[in-house]
Image (tube, rainbow, N blue to C red; front, top):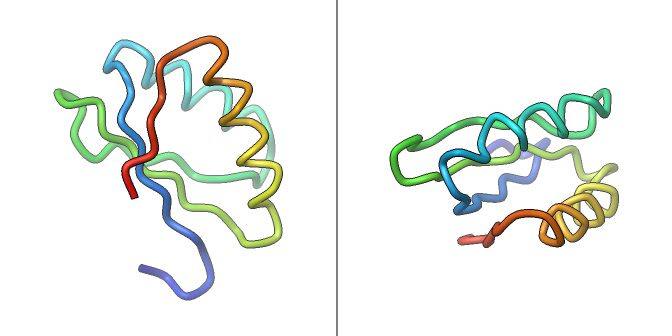
Length: 72
């Protein structure tokens, strides 16, 4: 784990990974999305501590549209 970022892992439907990546990338510098295991729908967000509240709000809004569950 990087000391300058927070790493949150999520389990999502694998068909939603591209959507999540595009939404997160639409916000400059909010977070970086890494696919850990596409087959299992595991992704990781690398988040600057300055943007943690914004990312949490974005995730809560995404949960209204798609199933997404934090796993760490």
